[in-house]
Image 1: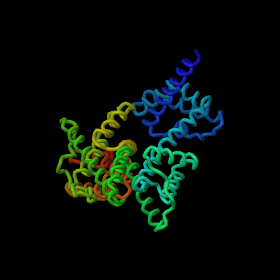
Image 2: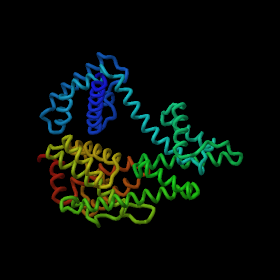
Image 3: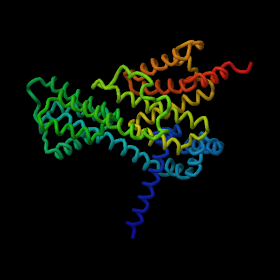
Image 4: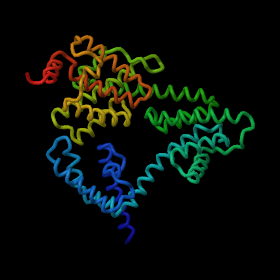
Length: 396
């Protein structure tokens, strides 16, 4: 009779943690400790004080469209959060660590696949994998056990140290693993898709360079597939913003390796659509959590990975707040004088956007691009520009 009760309790806990995780994704935090700015070993009295302070904030924001959904969620779930952070803290910490460790182990499995030579993991290559495990925060005993299990699943074995050019083998494995890590972190391909490429490459006895080229090609094809889906989604009349016309601007300088600028152009248009949507919602006072959730889905429909969508939406909110507060100067952002003619202003916008999308760091590129798009929305046509200039000069 006790087993069903225990199972019911476990299911309720799972549901509670899923509810919290969903809320945290929408507000852009990874844990409740981050959201409340609490140390994981914070004293109970400090935890209660933070909870009470945040609840008072939530009660004051129930009628504020900007924070209404967040505030009402906090009020409804105040008792649940208090239970998790005070009475069930150890369990919550354990779940956080389990989630982090599982993500790291999934990545570690991929690294093992990438370091295999045929059906053998050399000692040099294993050393590289263990280095990566340490950087991922995986304890060595767990990493060793996981490597053994991953090899067993692939029917592979550990090999003896190679007598010839061990440093070359180490560098090659390091290059492969670094490439895999970068592709996964960018969201270009899933770990499962990369594993299939690696398995096929090993079967064909392809060189590491050839496998890396295959991964690059697969990433390009994935982007084109997302572009097709985005084009289909944009077929509805209202789906494509006016500024995203096919010939609105030339392709960015750092186009896809194939020479076809379509992928980067569509990614650029997708970011611009998210910015336009966030701006409109903020001006109408309807940027609620449900709106943010819709933006997440729309971003995925447009072919953007989850990380880019979250970053674009977060940065758009910040830029929108600056815009509403009058702190966003489009002329400064576009680096032109206020007296510049409309065509030169448009050219400056396009130049700035190409610069942003060509930045080596993709995250910095998205941040810059979002701010440029938000600034451009204020002056993108003569009528909008006249309204902005009038507000900028103030009465009289």
